Picture (cartoon, rainbow over the protein chains, first blue to last red):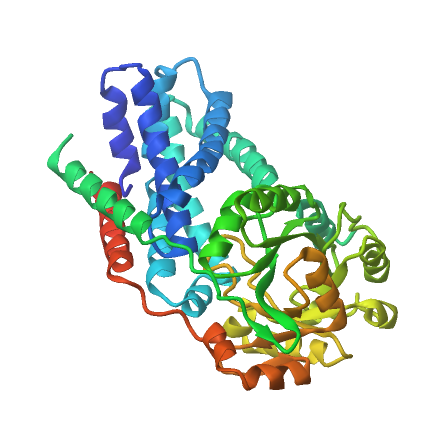
Amino acid sequence: MLHPGATYQELARLPDAPGKWLAARRPFLFAFILACTVSFAASGRLTLRLVIPATIYAGIEVLIEVVALAAVRSKTAPSFSHSLDLFFAGFGPWLLWLLAIAAVWTFASPVSAFRWTGPRWDLYIIGVFALWSGYIDFCFFRHVFHATPRRAVRNLFVQRAISWTLALIIFGAGPLWPEIVRILGI
Amino acid sequence: MNSTRWLAAVLIAVSLLAGTVSDTVRKNPPLMLGSYHVLAADFHVHPFPLSWSTLAPWDLVLEAQRQHLDAIAITGHNHVWVGKVGSWFSRQIGGPTILVGEEIVAPTYHLLAIGIDHTIDWQQPAAAAIDEVHRQGGVAIAAHPLFKYWAAFDSNAMSKLDGSEVLHPLAYVRPPAYLQFQQFYARKRLTAIGDSDFHGLGPVGMCRTFVFARDNSPSAIVDALRAGHTVVYDHDGHSYGDPDLIGLASQDSRFAELISPDPPPSFLVILSRFSGLAGLFILILFA
């Protein structure tokens, strides 16, 4: 997480070993941890009642990421399953953020948790994690997809544009258009 | 699998086991005050998908049961179909009363439409949206009426509005926001509403409304809201709503139990918390 450039250079040298388990293990881990956060945040504990369905819903987010990665995959990239494994290995900042959210909502009172994760803090903190995650993915495109710096930046923006747009639609399409109208004043 | 991963897996498994075993439903004993059924309700609960929430309608129904709520309104952002799914599911399992609703999110106002049947166009003034809510037999409640939304509620809209959220989680986080909710509520005689505006974070029903209804059917609850038969309490004990009902409630010790804070978490819940977070921490950082 702290030295993504060196780490991805090293990982890219590992032999390419395509396989379904390799393709699924880190995406599943991400979906599972996202689901655990949902369970902790809503009920203050890990319960199968919430973890199982939330893992399925989180699978939608995983699929979105997979589609967005497929859209920018280059000919010089390793097998798709290996690419997926290495791409999701870069999700560390988001996993840490989820863990922090889970911890706050589990141990703090709801009022304190709202105070600490309120609208403004949310935006600042997500901004920091988005930048950190963006840098990691830039290193992924540079060293795993063997892209030039310019190409890596382009991949990053296209991947983000696809994944964030789809996520916005699926998770929050309801108020999207009125919010755009409000922000643009049209 | 290396030993660190095993440790993480065992801790998470223990957490899941303890959390699932302790995950029981707490139902309020039926409470009658005068000729009214007293119901604990939350009329602002967002579902997944499309409304920035993490729980699907069936999860919301189960979570509302666990939070000993008698009724919730599932309010999608600018749509009602998810609320209908939740209502159907709750009927199948004998769950809490689910009111179909939506939060009409317009550029200049947010309005809860409770007890409606189909989606209401957000591209109209608040007064026209309220008319449409009433045409469908529902009630219109101003959602978190911060100062920035006040202009949309002109005298025409205010004359038609049924209620307003005088208590909302923002009230505890931003004192100026609470003041604005109180000032809006004082603009005319409005039904007092306390809602959690649930998006997946924190408990459903963190802020709740006590409805005094003739029974627990959706139509009886909507009638009670229309008649202003509600009581809301904040954490400091301030009350809002019908003064007669506040008086009636204050004389009954069973009502005091209904609004008393939850008991401290059990050993199993604490075990689930520590074990689960430790397992995830190890999994993310070391495994």
